[in-house]
Image (cartoon, rainbow, N blue to C red; front, side, top):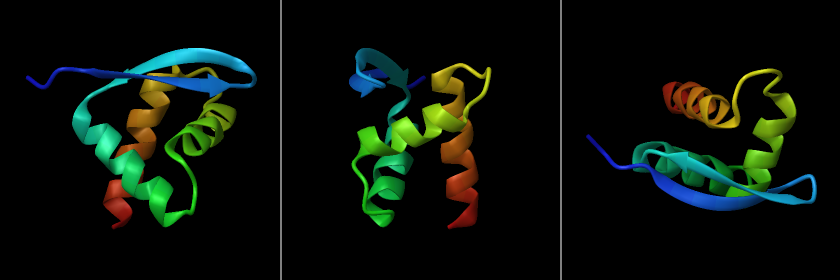
Length: 70
């Protein structure tokens, strides 16, 4: 089972950490590059649209949806 990779990001002015599997980070990195964003900027967009869903879950769902479009 892959280990989670934890990264720090700044959301609305406060630092938080986010732990995801390496495969999800890879999809987010590609998506951010394709959209001309940093990974942190992409995560801010995901955060703003996630509603009540936990951030890590929202990032995983975003990555799955994005990967299925490619």
